[in-house]
Image (cartoon, rainbow, N blue to C red; front, side):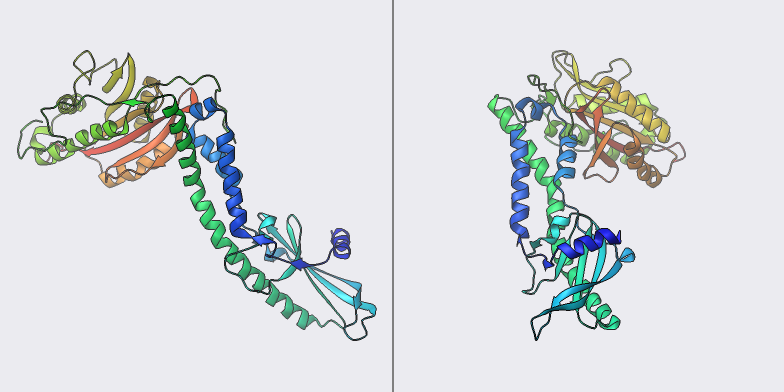
Length: 411
């Protein structure tokens, strides 16, 4: 190792670090190349690919890894070196001390000047995974060289700290910027083809009912670059997010009904509670041709169909632990076949610790092989995830899980 280090030592001269170009310009150029890559993708690839997978691929490609110095494995070398005498200016024999500091991360980040800087940057020689700090002099003193190196190391770490602030901001914004750019291009392509942005259609709401459900005061009974087809994209209808969230809001109100009328629900089984949910949902929406938007179809508890395809699927289950939830997710995946399908699982919790049940759900779903990511969902007892279709990772679906506390017979 020292032979290689001495070769570098003899050939290269230290130069100023963090002084080549502005870091801000480098990051702007990098983001421009990212957007250019998105724009250069085939039209049908953008329309068919999983946004999650493509985002992950681009994020891994364009995010930057800060150099992290490995101070525990620093080594030092000494050799004789011809050095210009500061008085006579003649080349005379002196001593060169070289510190070799291993690091992990992007070596290019030693080149750029951060927005916070001084006018006297440190000098060094940057290799792919190693930073060399050199001290030339006559009659070198170990204590003085050690102190000079400690001072230089602190200076370099200060500069890396300034660089790190901008790199952290860049990396944190990267996923959001990538997703927005991909979605913007998808929406533009869909609009060019005269399709609505979400490929959806609105369910026809009853005109004789208020836009939000009002709980009655009292009533006894009442969820690497990914491959994708470049074949012509075929648009597929899906329930839009507004109606998806409204359906979930209606179902969520069932929790309030159960809280206010515990006697009516304490002896109800899964099917009875499900029937109450269906009554309220059918009170809000007209059906598609059959007059029954929400039906029992096979073993599926609640579904919306359009053109003989399931576009909203929900299962109602009492909490039976992790295995029961995994089985229910697999059951959901068996029924869905359309892009951007909206699904839900309504869990009825009886005789179990609600906090314990809620704490288990995210971990259970994230262990599922079809899990892609967890989404923000403003509900104390609800969660939202993105999963992929059982046969195609590019076909994604929303899964919202809502837990209801159901009264038991002892209440």
